[in-house]
Image (cartoon, rainbow, N blue to C red; front, side, top):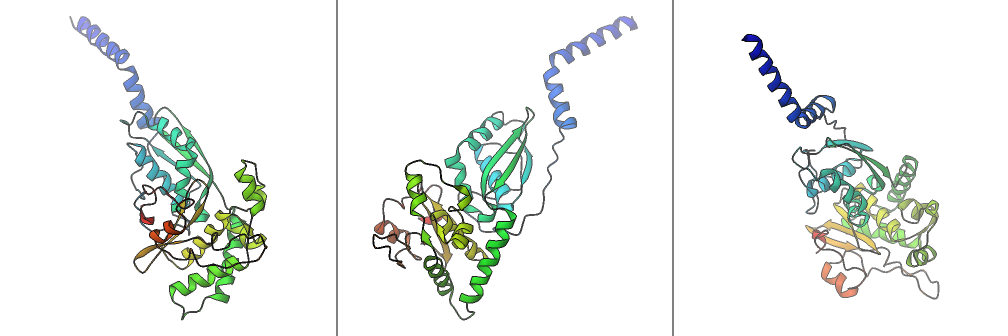
Length: 307
């Protein structure tokens, strides 16, 4: 009788193992083989502490939806991590699919660069994942360590010359704004190439602050990055605002957000004359839209503070 009961018990166990094979395997893989241990590194020196409405830094790295994924990617970028591994919530069945969709949606994801330091902004993101919710994101940054060092030293040198302790915040920003325009020419050649969907020479760094400060020629990305890095050094809250074809700065002073577009204050004219304007220097959104309702029309659901 005991042998019969033992056989029956063994049969039930074997049937249960067959029936619940996938569940058991998944449990073992998730909890023992792919341990859900998340390693949190210290942020690099360029992390921003400004709070924005579109994205939020998180400490919970088990996403449940696309918004959680966006916040995790923003947190990775803002902290300057080169690589980070997180785990999808076990109930979030579409997690890896949504990760792929986000990574592939360059227009949507590139907005995150506008909320972090230019030094932490990405050129490309690479994603690896498995069927058990483990996701690793590797970051290829726009600025190399050598470029960061050179840009930092150059801006520090400029600040020592231009910035006086007695200046107001607006005067400090204006002095730097004017310096950038007086020493830079807008890169019309590369701008025309981009307009015609042609490749530009990335080695010229026309899109970033390095090209602006050392080649003295730049596209709007170089102007806005150079301004953003300067504002970060002064601990002035700021972000960048972008459209499909343009990018500029948003600056928080006197308890209010103001637009600053150094590119449009450095116009290209037929006479090749070097002009310095202040039409787009620390102006309200109402003023911005009155002066240009076309190229400065931004997505207000993303750049909430810019309204």
